Image (cartoon, rainbow, N blue to C red; front, side, top):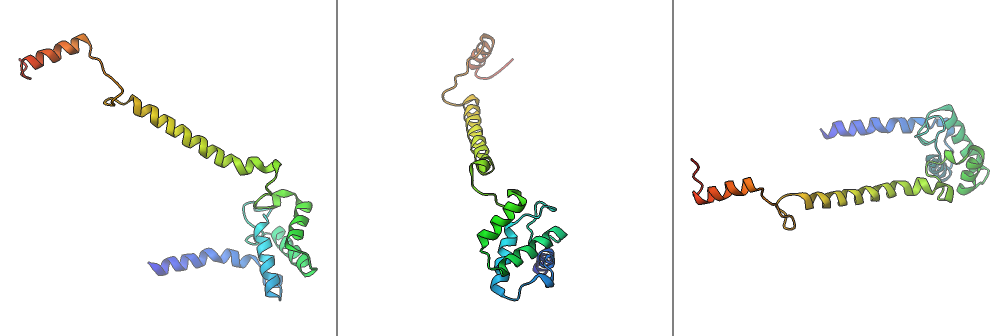
Length: 160
């Protein structure tokens, strides 16, 4: 069973390793590692939910080559990312900047989660108070029920 999992894990890694072609790889391993790190932060605009590093589209290949070209020219990581944002817009970033125009992206999910937790808590509290048998809820018997109960208690539970 373990071997099957290992084989499946290896097959899952193949698309990411095949995305970068041998001609794209830089000779300097430090620059190549920086290129891979930058490419993993950029979104492929064709695939949209894959990084440029993982995608095998022609757009992703062009961006990978552009990143490597910028690195060879001596640009820093931040400069390359700023260049890409200037050229393609903020949508190219997999993780957008933390800025006033992106606050909704950053705070909406935690806000909805908190609202959901509060709603579930109050609903649970209200339901608990409505359940019979709780200490703060009294149940009153109708006259017919009280009469039946009294007759059962008189007869010691024996009914005719």
